[in-house]
Length: 101
Image (cartoon, rainbow, N blue to C red; front, side):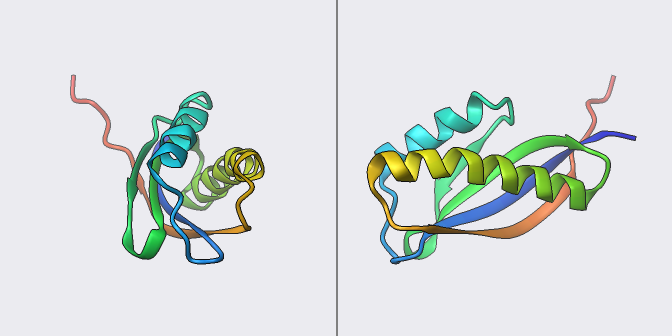
């Protein structure tokens, strides 16, 4: 059965530099256009914490979908901004709470 999963990832520039507020804003917009309800924030040492909601059959499928979505959106942004490569790290995936009715 397909369920909603909240997946948290980190993305970081491989050179250790920060993405910057404008870059975080653009990445948020790109992810929002994918319909994943993104929440982004700055982490330690230049990382960006990314939370998104995806629909999948399991936590592993949710992780894969979230990583693919982030990679696809980030590659275009990184190319546009002329940034060095990036690394995506998995944090966790939890089943989204279902609204009580």
